[in-house]
Image 1 (cartoon, rainbow, N blue to C red):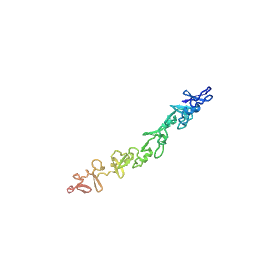
Image 2: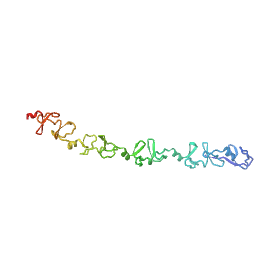
Image 3: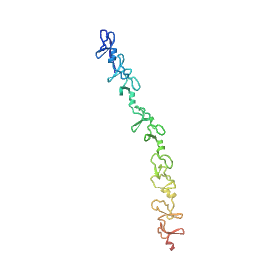
Image 4: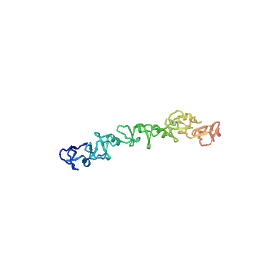
Length: 290
C-alpha cells in the first residue's frame, strides 16, 4: 500500500536529528519520533525503490509490499510496463512485479507449434503431455490444420488421414488404392476384401476356398461350373477339392484317379499299365478276353 510521512514546517526552535541544522521555517520530515531535514531524510531514512534503486524522497508517493518499496511511477509490470497502482499484481523472481495477464501468460503451457502461451479459453489439442493451439496442430505432409480431427503419429510428426494413407498405407494389388483398414494378403500381396472376389460371380473370397487360374480367382462353385475339366469317366468336374485330388491325364482327356478303371472288370488303373481300345480303357488282361 502507499506510505507517507508527516511533513511540516517548524515555527519554533528545532534542529535536524542528523545534521543539527535548525528546522525553523523549513520543511522537515518526522519518522520514528525523529525530525530531520529533507536532505538528511533522503540520505539516511528514505527507502530505496526496488525498480530504479534510487531513494524515495519525502515528496514522492511510495508503495510498499512485504518490506519492499517502489516509487509509484516505478510500480509497473516487468513484462508489459503497465502501471500496477490500484491493480492486481504478483511478485515474482528477482523482486519483479507482474500484472495478472502477463503472469497467466508466463505460467501458461507453450504451444508446440508456435511456442506462444496457450491462455485459458484458447482451443487446443493435447497429445502425450504436449499441447498445441488448435490452428497450430497441422499435418506434417500437407500442412493443413488437423485441429480436433483424426490423425496418425509417426515419431515426432503427425499426419492427417489422407496423407497417412498415401504415404504409409499398403496399396491394394487390384485397385492400387491404399488399404486403410482390414484387407487380406495372398501370395505376399495386400488386397481390399472387396477387391479379392470371384471372377465369375463377384462374391468376396476372404475366408473361403477358392482356386487361382491365370491370375483369376474362382469360388469352388464357379470353378466347377466354368473352369474345371470334366472327368471322362463320371462326367463330373475335376476340382482338386476333397476326394479325387489326384488326376489321370491321357491324350486330351482327364479322369479322377478313382474313375480311371478298366471298362470290363472295373479294376482301378491309376499308376498301372492299361490298354486303350476303341476309345475305351482296359487293364492289360481284359483285351485278351474280348
